[in-house]
Image (cartoon, rainbow, N blue to C red):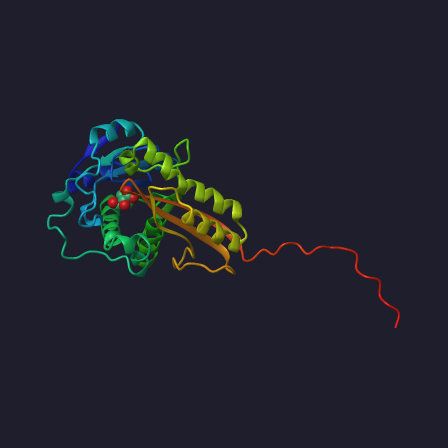
Amino acid sequence: MTALVTTKADLRRARAQLPGTVAVVMTMGALHEGHLMLVRRAREIADSVVLTDFVNPLQFGPGEDFEAYPRELEADLAQVDGLVDLVFAPSTEEMYPVLPPPVSVTSGRLGTRFEGAARPGHFDGVVTVVTKLLQLVRPDAAVFGRKDAQQLAIIQRLVADLDLPVRIEAVDIVREPGGLARSSRNAYLSEEGRERALVLSRTVRAVEAAAPDTGAVLAALREATGGAPAGVDWAYAEAVDPATFEPIGPDHQGEVLVVLAARVEGTRLLDATSLHVAGRVHPPVSRGRLPEPTAP
Ligand code: PAF
């Protein structure tokens, strides 16, 4: 049976009763198969699982979809019933008695790039709520998806830099049958919008096919953004160093994160993939017969 708690005091009491190790899955609700994958992973790595279901106002900018964001607690509870031990679904006032909180956590330089450049303050809001939820749940592990690649990288840095005693577990992107990465925001798209949005997953496949040639990966990204179908507004499509989020050059060797964001029908969609690249891969040199040495 899954228990629901909505206050911090009840969460602390219920958490104290959970047996063994605990993994947390943090969500903003509107659960889909992607979240359920995180829950399944949490089940594999811990004895007890806590799911948090909270639409965090701090990570939405002015004019973003905070009000419209789907809130479906009943349906969420039905989806995870029996799969998680505890659901924590607090009100905004419970999480933030004063809004905005006078003291919060900052996401540093990583939080100002890409998604952070387009959504100023977004990652500060994310790391503030993640820190609070880690403090409240006190899990051994926290499970996050790789689709929000920059969020994952920033949370990994948060835990390392602030010495938070939790292990971060990353889970691969879950895709719809056509390839679109699962997201609660896909619900905003029409059938036509979904079709258009497939340009993101096609780009993921193109860069994966181009690896390990770094130059070919960068060319595939240029081609994808240059030839985008009508109705797709690219925000960025970059290959970056996963540690710094600095764009890489054609000679880069090693791990690379490809991060993609595009707006379709007003909805911002993300996708990502990790690659190993080997720098410029030159065409093989022809091994024709060498000329006979000429007599001196
Ligand atoms: O990924 C999300 O759904 C949110 O950013 C998170 C981690 C639950 C924080 O509100």
